[in-house]
Image 1: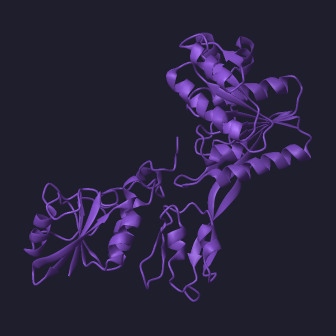
Image 2: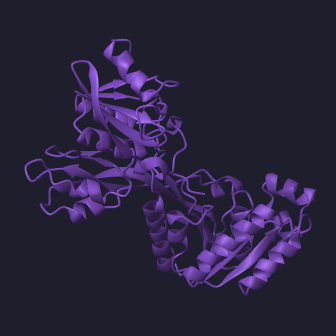
Image 3: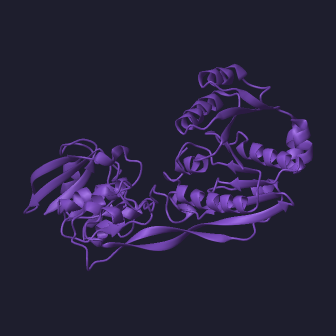
Length: 274
Length: 137
């Protein structure tokens, strides 16, 4: 099975569009394809694919809870917490501020008295949809207000990988969130190839360099998908491609017909226009 | 009695900083018999913190065993933990010096605040509580 990511730093450049079109095209060629929507803070691949999210499965995250019997009020948990989510003053029990807690686990690992227990809370959900006979969609969605969504991406990705392995899937396509933060990194880990989607604008160029720097660090072979290639300044994108020793392998034109077909969810027509 | 005031610089003649978690300095003012006896200036390490600046600030002033906090605005996290320790919180102060603010408090001209005054910039439990560091791009 091949694992391919559609990623990028800038929002609205066409990461999801590319991921969906790639999945759609491969499935048309008779390949068994799973598309995994890893943009868990704002998943929307299902909308373009005309699906209603089905087969929900809860995703849990662990949060700290104090065992006052064991706590020696040393304050080490508070000192360790990088999110400043533990309020502590001398001779008092620490207070956990759940609004700020990411559930990273540092406090219960560091506590010398094992006074921090964990409790599970629902942090999100994953969904499973059959789009057609050889095309499946797995979607992750975080609960509003969850401050760290990397672990949710890990869980939804695991569900997709498990299904893919059990069903001899040819290709798993991961559609990441925009950015270079934890949730994007989590989606990119272990992929065979990444397509960095961008547009020929100064912001597009700037953000392309950021994502290529990340994929280089993660040792993921990457190529560029240039959306709206025929407007703006393509030269800048070519320079960055050269700098990172890669190439623009897909070009999507700026065309009203294409946008129209896309909005009408006519993926056949969209694929034919590229 | 000890009074903490958020300030834009580290002396009594500095203006009150309207922000609590991200103020430049905390001035811990010591008061005896309704008169200022001395003060200590603490630089706020939370000025450029990604998140949790309010909690960090609350911890700094609470560790100084203060009785009263005077500031401009305070978010829900810092407000809750500070009121939990019994510290009196006075908000809405700005445009005057630290010395003046303390004097006004001592004359009984400032009122205690019973609720936080800003929605806070942490991610919050629901979406209406602002866009914090949750989305990092």
